[in-house]
Length: 256
Image 1 (cartoon, rainbow, N blue to C red):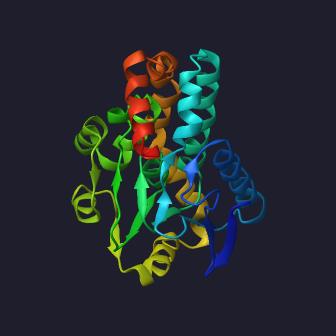
Image 2 (image 1 turned 30 degrees about the vertical axis):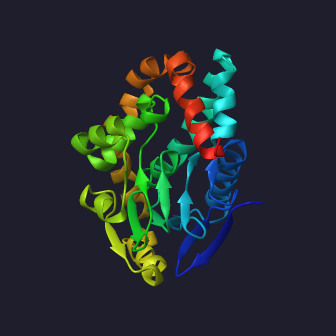
Image 3 (image 1 turned 90 degrees about the vertical axis):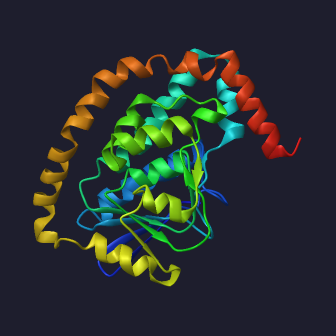
């Protein structure tokens, strides 16, 4: 099912609904690109709010889908998987209009990176977990994502959250600076709209140019240096030790 896009108070509100918890797989990637194609074609002047459904913003990569790719040991297939995944995050990160993640619940691993792609992050005050737990489950953090993480959270917090790979409560995540604001659940959309409407449409070009300038060093790093580092990802993702960690995680999920 295509992601739902509603215009509310001058904002394009995009509701991710690829699957129950928005695990990120080929279907999720396609839904994201289809949604942003529509945004560019039909709602190009509007700021964008990205949100999930129920108690989950996004649970991150689909382990069944991704671990099967890594376990194939097919370097070209893994390289293509990453190219598709990278493109989705950069599509959000570089979108020229104001972007707000209205975080309605859990945002884990790739799901948190999706939120970090946005200019602003507003979280609902409710029990939820947040974190970048790729490394402890045997997935090297792509260098391109490290640059986005550092841009959004700063180098010190980015290093802590990436390397330790812990999952944090809402309160812990707030102290680490994951969010610009935490609000009551009933206020989540209205506060996200307030952030999204930080400028009038007349100032769209000024916003786009300023955002591009702020991100320039990050994009240059991603397009140049991280390309070299991420060339090593296929081997790292299918490393024997990483595969054992991935298998353990998969068994934990399946209750085996």
